[in-house]
Structures are given as structure tokens and as C-alpha cells.
Length: 498
Image (cartoon, rainbow, N blue to C red; front, side, top):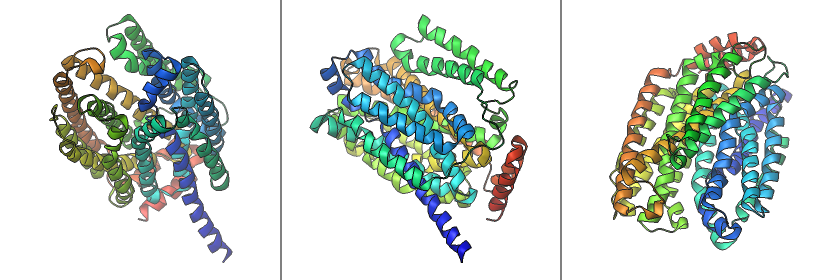
């Protein structure tokens, strides 16, 4: 009877854990997009320059992307719950300072620190969920996680537009504080501490420093390439730094006693295939979000709030279907769901590539609906495929690497989509581009996105194994972690018993 009670309590705990992680996830994913529509209000209030406004957005994205792998590894070493809670506190404090910012500089610094807090939290959400759920239930949990993530990204422009118009741009930052308090309380109540017991508490400082330098240079080059010019000395210098630092990181990891990243992780076919699909997915999706929002405002003459609301069909499809695709992934495997989702996304991009200056919203609606179906069908299986490809012991660094690939994919997508757009539409401020030229540039960018997504279909089919992959992958991971053998055996048994 006591054992039965404990089993029920443990079962309830994992769902409380999922709720706590999704609560925090919504908060920091919202901040990826909530600020964009508030930029005109920030400019008027603080007298910000265009560069200052760009860094209000880019400062957060840069520190977030660069530190994700480090945040995941710190969770493995010092405890995932502990590092997650530190991230929540850092995020809440920096949100308060952003809301109180008296100048553009203070706001940008606060946004950079917000990105640091988010980088400590994001890998924790996935690794804590991975630890709480057995392998055969992770798809369902990851589906809920993916739905919340998409909901936050899509509601960002709506919430930001509403608060900027009817309250104040500062309210978009103050909103994070009560959410952070709720996330801390829920985490303390529901989440058990976990860490990688196969390693000590030694930090690979050399690896962290070199990876941070390399990723900072790479992401900064991607973020600023279109503004500075791809052939400018600054961009070329950043690319050179990345080209030296990232291979140097791999060399360091092969030599140090306690590496930050076991290179064998990237030799795992399922894991490498899943994170590559994650990069391709965000490459295509973030470019669509960015340019369609501008298209609806500058060409179709919608307000920021009206444009944000018109993304809701996409969001509703993701929220409704992501848990379903996660459930299906648990039963039929992730490969064909991922391939099908990417193919649907490619069709959506081709629909967007045919937009005209006078297109109605009804002409865009099928693309939004298909895009929502494609994201939902790809995101959950991709995430569960990546996290099931490794042992629970390595969940922190694995989730950090997956998140890092996704963030770099988003930056790469906006940069390359922007370069393609400008090659057709011309350079200059978006407001100064003729509607016909804008549509021509958008058509080229969306067509290229569709081709990239077809490459993703091939990657999903060839790299991701079918339903039975968990047993063989778990067995191979046992060699990576002497302390993880028991956990791996348990995971393999659970997968084999389905």
C-alpha cells in the first residue's frame, strides 16, 4: 500500500515538474519576441539610436545562444535544479533592471544579463524533464514543452503590442517578475535535484572560454553581417576568430581530464541528426517570423498588434498538435514524423513565396496553418529523439547543445534570409523599400528556405533510426559514462518493453 502511494506520488511529481519547467520556459521564450513590437516606444522614451534598438534585441539573443552549452554542463556538474533556480533569479533581477532602465545602455546591459539567465534555465528545462520521465513517455512531455515554447514565441508580439499600446513598454519586463516567483516556488515544490554522477565538480574553464569566444564571434557575425556587410573587415575578423576557436575547442576537449563536452556525443548518429534537424527547423521558422511580420506591417499596412494576432492560427496548430505528435513519437518513432513535418513546412514556405503586394490574409492563412502543423510535427519528435539518444546522465549538456544548435540556426536563418532578401529588394531601411521589391525579395528568401527544409527531410530519413532506436543507442551510451550504466540499463529495458 505504501509502495502504491509512493508510485502515485512519483507519477504526480513528474507532471508537476513538467508544469514548473513549462512555466519558466514560457517566460524566457516570450522574451525572444515580446520586445520587437515595443521598439518604437522604447526609441521615443529613451531617445535610442537604431543601433541601440538592434542591440536591445540582439544582446539577449547573443548571450542566450553563446552560453547554452555552458549552462547545460554546469547543471550536469552542480545540479540541474540548482543551476536552473540561479538562472530564474538572474532573469528576474535583470528583468526588473530592464524595466527601470534610464538609458539605452542600461537597457542593453540588462538584456544581455537576461540572456545569461535564460541560458542557465533553458537546458535545465529539458534535462530536468528528461530525468523526470522514462524514455517511453518523453515524447508526450516534450510535445507539451514544444507547444509552450511555440506559444510563447507567437504570443510575444501580441503581448508586447498590447502592453506597449495600453500600458507601457516597461511592463513587458515587469511581467516576468511574478512569473519568476511562481517558477521558483513550483520548482522547489516539485523538482528533484539531479546531476551527472559520473563526473566530479571540476569545471573545464579552458573549454568554456574558447567555446564562448568562438560562438560569440560566430553569432555576432551572423547577427551583424547584413548591417556591417559580409565582406567588411569586422565580419571577416569575427569569422576568422570562430574558424580558429571552434576547432581549438574540439582539440581541448580531446585532451582535458574533465571535458565540458564529450565529443563522442556528436558521433551519436541519432543525436547529431536530431540537432541538425533542429538547426534547419529554426533556420526556416525564424526567417518567416521576422520577414512576415514586416511584410504584414509595411506592405499590407497592419498595425503591430494586428500583425501579431494574425500569427495565432500558426500558434494554435502548434499548441494543439505538438502534444499529439509527441505521443505518436513515443509509439511509432520520430523519423517519419520529423520528415513529414519538414515537408509540410516546405510547402508552407512555397505558399509564402507566392505572396503579392495586394495579397489578402486569406491567401496567407493556408501557409500559417501548414506552418503550424509542420512545426508541431517536427519539434516534439526532434526533441525527444535528441534526448533519448543519450543517457540521462548526460541530459544537461545534451539539452544545452540541442538548444545551442537551434539558437544558432535561428540567427543563421535571419542572416541568410536577410542577405537573400536584400540581394533582390536592395539595401536600406525596410520602410524605404518599394512594396514590389519587398515581395520579390521575400519570394526568393522563402523559396530558398523551402529547399533547405527538403535537405532537412533527407537528414531526418537517413540519420534518425526508427522506433527501436532507444535500446541500441542507450547501450552505446553506457560506454560514455561509467556511472550511468544502471540508468542506461533501466532506460533500455523501458524502451524494449514497449
